[in-house]
Image (cartoon, rainbow, N blue to C red; front, side, top):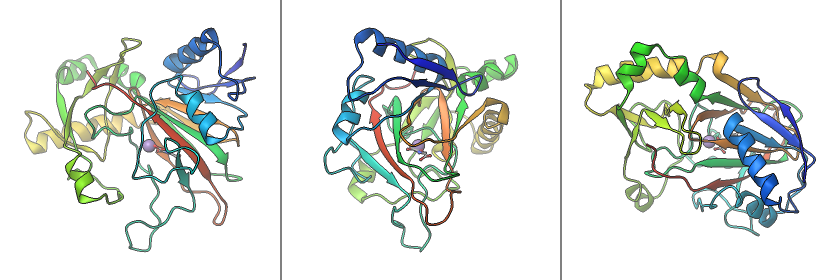
Length: 279
Ligand code: OGA
Ligand code: MN
């Protein structure tokens, strides 16, 4: 099987075409797709028309799909979650909750965060609703040698409800919260497949740098976040219907935008695959 590829963001993100995932790629094609993902961190597979089980099966070639019970799932397939503009206000304060509206990486509050997230644009608005990404390898590489030496080996506590968070997060049942102990992760992580280093930040989930006083920790985290979100490290994905966008949570942050016209629909199917404890 062959596919076409188009560089999207220069320093990250690639789109491939000429693939119909209703037929699973042969091993060589699958390896080539994985290679594109590892080098570009965001892989867009254009022009898909997939029922939920076929979406799950195609994504299972990239890892082990995991259940996310706090999100709605499709009827046909529990591993395929639904992210929709029709999502209800789950906090009860009358405002719509936009999942992922600030810079984040998925599930960093878990000991073994998902490695990849796959979003499939089933219905996309006429404009807006882009997803933005940051290349965290590039953000790390651009740090000064002094900063690299300073943060090398530091660990950070991540929590679902961090005292630093500024966003609104959906409430989860008490038993679920108890089953989500805080996780401690390196501030600089090594990509298990490419060996490259990346800053590992999650603005609303990081609580404190281990071994630093609160004020010093806050100052360091704020400085690193401000650096990482500079426009030069970003790519903005403008969705086309039928796009599957796969991103690597081990080396990117991302952000949703709820800026599409009122009354227009945005319906995404979502799969995440298992990852290892960051090191
Ligand atoms: C996610 C997410 C962004 C978007 O699914 O994890 O952050 O643009 N989505 O919907
Ligand atoms: Mn997300």
